[in-house]
Amino acid sequence: MSPARTIRSVRLAFKSLLLHKLRSGLTMLGIVFGVFSVIAMLAIGEGASNQAQKQVLELGATNIIARSVKPPEDVSTNRGGSGFMLEYGLKRDDYKLLNERVIPSVVQSIPIREMVQEARYGGQALNARIVGCTPEYRTINNLRLDRGRFLTDQDQETIANVCVLAYEVAEQLFRHEDPLGKAIRFGSGGRYEYRVVGVMKPRSATAGIGGSLAAQDFAKDIYVPLRTLYERQGDEIFRAVTGSFSAERIELSQITLQVEDRDQVIPTAEYVRETLERTHPDSKDYDVVVPLELLRQADQIRRIFNIVLGSIALISLVVGGIGIMNIMLATVTERTREIGIRRALGARRKDIIQQFLTETVVLSGVGGMVGVALGLLTPPAFGLIQWFIQRFVLETNVAGTDMGRMFFDMRPEVAFWSLPLAFGISVGIGVMFGIYPAWAAAKLDPIEALRHE
Image 1 (cartoon, rainbow, N blue to C red):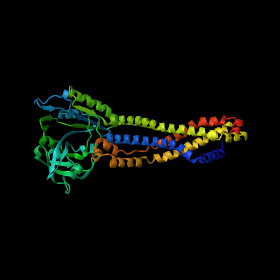
Image 2: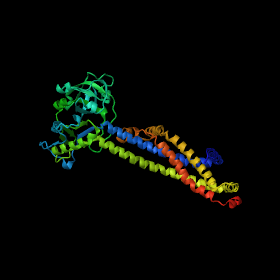
Image 3: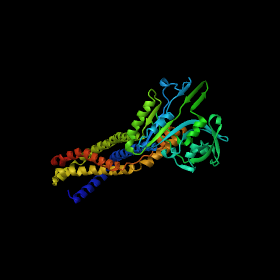
Image 4: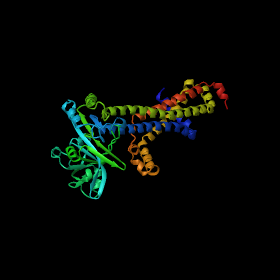
């Protein structure tokens, strides 16, 4: 068909559709909302997936994390031998063994010890996570300094009583003061003083991963030299709660190994698992987490998520297509006499089919373009919904929970490949559901059509 005939057919299609503006507009709405829902669903799925992948990447795509895990009650053992002392988790000997074996692919490894204690300065106090670590902890966890300095090798060697505060800890303990050079207290009875040498910039929390790696909120951290924590605090943790008493001994909370290349992460992780299985043969007091494996799983979940959400949204497009078929069949009935006149003047069946298919494509195409325009507004629209829910629906404390943060931190990201896809599907559905009405119009007998009133 020549371009001139195509343009003329499109003009006639617009003219016919504008004769019934309301009906055409309502029919088009099915396609508009169908295209919008496809783009919006995929954008929400993409945003949720990217958020999950970002949190996994913050753990380090080339990292291997061995984490101490408190064993279930039915398999807990008092390996310390003191009767009431529960001893579990990674040992300093595990760290030495992994380092002595000199794994070629490992660039660096750091031991970490964590405990929750009350930190005090003057009349201010809060429960903080005390993290005993080495200077490499900062780079391996992508932490940034706000002021001062981080821990150094000299702090480790001299067992210095120094600490670095997370931004929120500094804000709560030192409301109107500069914390650098000041001393805070924590430890057994708050008897140990630690001089503040640095403050970190705010850092978003990482999501919990299964039962092996809990969510980490870096906002409540206080970093001290690992050797200092050993000397001042020891390995035992005693808790006295009304009517009960518990004691635990744990040497290391975590060992993080950084591998030189992504391709070496999985084989190195298997080697680490085999090594720890030999030193912990009968216990379930550790786990090995590989962020790269989690990243691949998140990518697979993203694909499944997009397929499921896209399929659900496609249903609304199909419903819109059924609406188009219904209207076009009604149009054929209304325009029977017009069809008879055109046939009598020499129009062929394929001309009639072309005319009605053009109207269908114009209807679905315009609806598709409007739907794409609305789909581009998904991020600000979702932000408005988040604001409304947070302001008028949820209680204030709900937004601070893990699920609340996950929802309110999510930012839909429009996948630009979804725009031509959704538009193409809308036009395809228009053609598919317009073929039967067009064929029904072409099959009308010209003489009978002329007699139609």
